[in-house]
Length: 310
Image 1 (cartoon, one colour):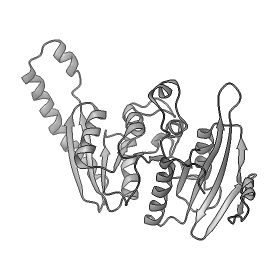
Image 2 (spheres, helix red, strand yellow; image 1 turned 90 degrees about the vertical axis):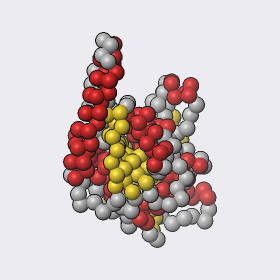
Image 3 (tube, rainbow, N blue to C red; image 1 turned 45 degrees about the vertical axis):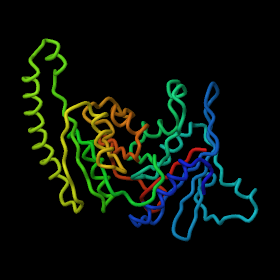
Image 4 (spheres, rainbow, N blue to C red; image 1 turned 180 degrees about the vertical axis):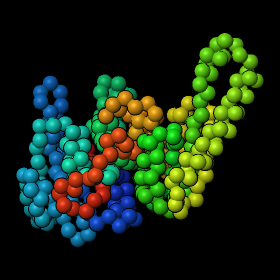
């Protein structure tokens, strides 16, 4: 059941279907937002919540889960819609948390640069407030993931994101990338430290980072996927983007906050910027400081939430 007619939403549906088949997920939940009102008045969102399984369809109607068959009369579908006095992002995040979802799949809400400056979109808010991992689908899927780039900053967040990626792409080739930045390099240049001295420090730091990255990758064993490691000097966002283009990555993986932890709903700069504008799909890992056993309140199979924006 898809209410959004955008190509991006259809891409998210197809990726959810591919993952469900690949990972043998028995049931996944689809939350389709029909209308969301924000502004001066109280927010309100009209949405449907379906559980899609092999040969079965169930709908959450008036707080109860009921079997649902595709109606012959189009007006009968009106019974699917629920209304809550919340924003669309709050509805999706709340439902995912209630069911103990491992992964939320969504398409980015495309807007022009001026509107991006004024306010976050619903997809931005879902990524920012979710406790679980979020997969942002930027491309039309044509196959399972083949080349995965994992950005590593040695934090618990990047470790959790990497483990999620290994589960989602069991047949892919993995490249583990660390962007090395020499501490106080700017200050050293300001005080006119010779470039040869700075370069020597950078080379030494990269060598140590390679050793640390190898040890970090070893913590992921056993892993069956072919893998490579890379350490490049520079700021994380341009380094990650350049490496993704170079290896032809179809999935970039990042930790939620990384080493700069600043609260429950925060995103690190790399996750925020790359998650919004990447050329390929982006997986942002769960908030490791908030990980807890899934509630599975609805009693269905664990797995995926597909969020769609109208």
